[in-house]
Length: 59
Image (cartoon, rainbow, N blue to C red; front, side, top):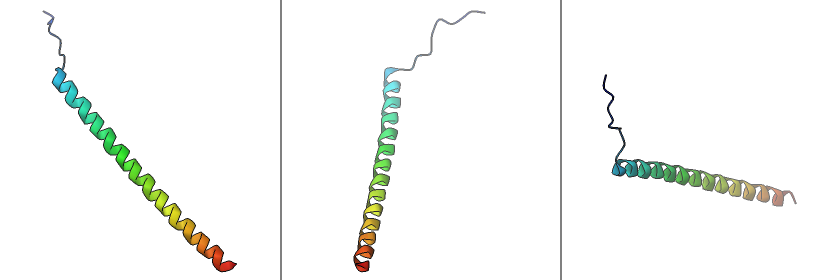
């Protein structure tokens, strides 16, 4: 049986396409994480304001 000396090597353009796809996925994940952190910060800030108002009423 003859062994082919031709290796399957992806083209540079294909490799770049995969790289850009991976970067796009990472960017999307980063944006979603940032949005989640912002929502968590806003929730904590509102809760803190409510706690402060409750504290002020008790004074």
